Length: 152
Picture: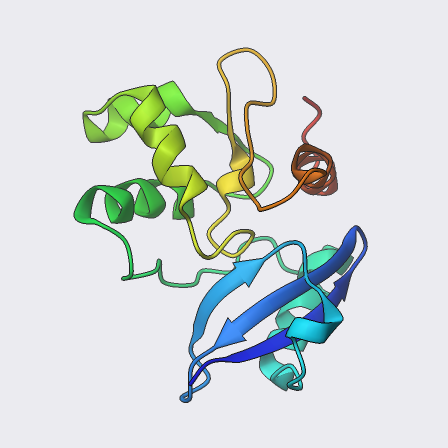
């Protein structure tokens, strides 16, 4: 059984979903109170508080094992992007021997948004997309990048 928990971020609620062993399995940047009735583990509350206060730059959390081999390759490349930096879809495609559109598709399937920082992947010219779930996704991506000191 999975346990959804809510965290109040500066841009809105985030839902974090944990398994029975308190392993993080999903992050949704559009959290809804009615879908997250469980208390957030204290260790994750501290990590998120530290990130949003600027004390934590990178979560250094393992990528999800729930994706395809290709998706995991993309997510690993994303996980290596330090805070305050961005790579383009094309940069990652070159790094792993793929195509930018395929990289974008894998970014959109990243179940650990924010923690595996797909917001740090941008288009060759401009912000690019952000499949965090709902209509204000690009505003959240822009907020996260600005929080990390990046203006796009």
